[in-house]
Image (tube, rainbow, N blue to C red; front, side, top):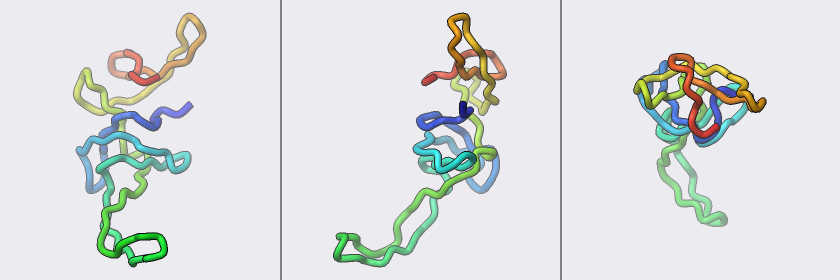
Length: 106
């Protein structure tokens, strides 16, 4: 079970986008995420009339390592570590380490 999943709101803790918040749009592999509005680069695209692609400079979101982000806790307004807890009915849920509350979107 992954601590950070697609759809989670995260805050960047390291790198040039430090302090930015965004939503995880995809997991690339075990340790890389795509976060909306974070690690955006300019890419020079060549036009391709067969595919209907116009040329120019486009913005592209690049993957960021999950060690550089923390799950955003709306109760505290900061990034928070994540742990796991097994409930009485046997389901496993993610919880915030600071206050023990379950993460929304489990």
